[in-house]
Image (cartoon, rainbow, N blue to C red; front, side):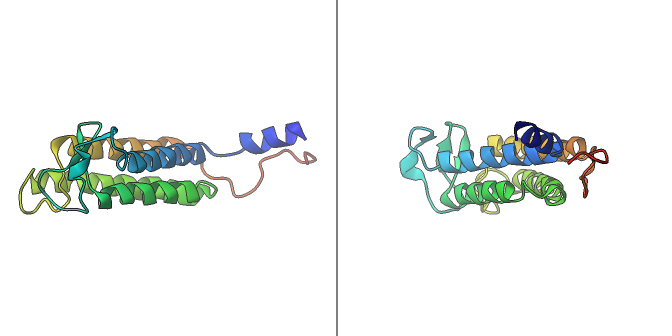
Amino acid sequence: MPGETESRSERRPPVQYVVFGTGLVLLLVGLLGFVPGATTDYHMLRLAGRGPSALLFDTFSVTIVRNLLFVVLGVVFLAVTRTPPLAHGLLIAAGLVYLLLYGYGLLAGRGADANLLGLNDPDNWMHLAIAMVLLASAFLAGQKRHPTHSTSPPGDV
């Protein structure tokens, strides 16, 4: 019944939409890292490490490992979309991980021996932006707590 589908989707917490959209973006970014054209200097795409590398959108340093991590994280986000408490927890956990990546990038420095991920300045700013968006989304989308039972009025089937 048409009304039945609408009422089910209206009860879906916002956190599920946020996590689904985030998963799609992460998956897309990870896949684009393997596409010549979206990734410049594609011949420099390597497994991991520091030094010159291919650049996504001629800006962000990419490696095979980092592209695969974006793909895997995107798939994880999509997988937990149906479970609001897990989705909310994932937003927080991923936001904290990206905040740590930002800190690591600042401390490791561009081109330094400690920069095992080959991060550049735009990567660092992107990690900070992702962290802030994920943590803010967790806070805002988590304002309406995840219902564990139907909030339909009695007699509504």
